[in-house]
Image 1 (tube, rainbow, N blue to C red):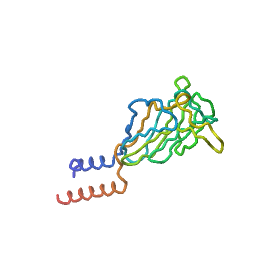
Image 2 (cartoon, one colour; image 1 turned 60 degrees about the horizontal axis):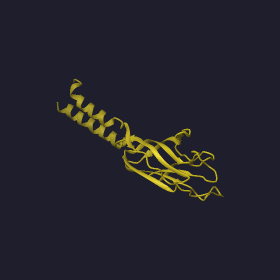
Image 3 (tube, helix red, strand yellow; image 1 turned 180 degrees about the horizontal axis):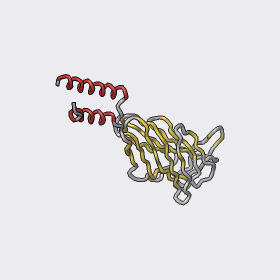
Image 4 (tube, helix red, strand yellow; image 1 turned 30 degrees about the vertical axis):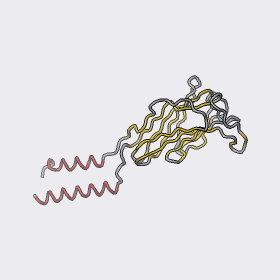
Amino acid sequence: MSLQPRLPLLAAALLIAAPSWAATLYTLPAPTAALETNNSVALNFAAGAGAGQLAFTLAGYATLDGDNFWIDILHVTLNGSEVLSGTWDIGGGGLSRVLVDPNGATVGVVNNSTKELMISLPVTLAGGSNQLVFNYESPNAFEGSARAGFQGLGDEGWGLNAVTVTGNLAPVPEPASGALLLGGLGALAWLAKRRR
């Protein structure tokens, strides 16, 4: 028997087994305005379940402090779980520190002329709706010592100049269902051959 009658079946099997390629799932349409600390920005997007990548540019307005008396802390959560937090000296002084980083973020160097910091990190996306929340806080206490707390836009502010999320567009079929489908296609091919 020639290979030609089997080509449609092989093509269908390859399309089903092909991986879901990474795509841009979300891009921030425009930079945010300057925000006071103790504010958050929530972004919603749809994705296929699996590995993804988050990249964003944090903007400092006036100053943002690292770990000092006037500490300002960024928290990033994905679907309710914290994926990154840290405090960076963006013109306000203090020690730059990553506080929570379960996935291994890449944190750039603060660009003092533009007051920007680029950060990239791997994330695990849920199939369907996802929510990404950026929250900056100026606490009154941190690690057991008193801190300055909220200071307002006259002294500090933050924003997002860019946010990009990449990952799978559609859910990837589970291996068990893919194997079952391929088995069914094989059975159909066997029946077609037997009828001849």
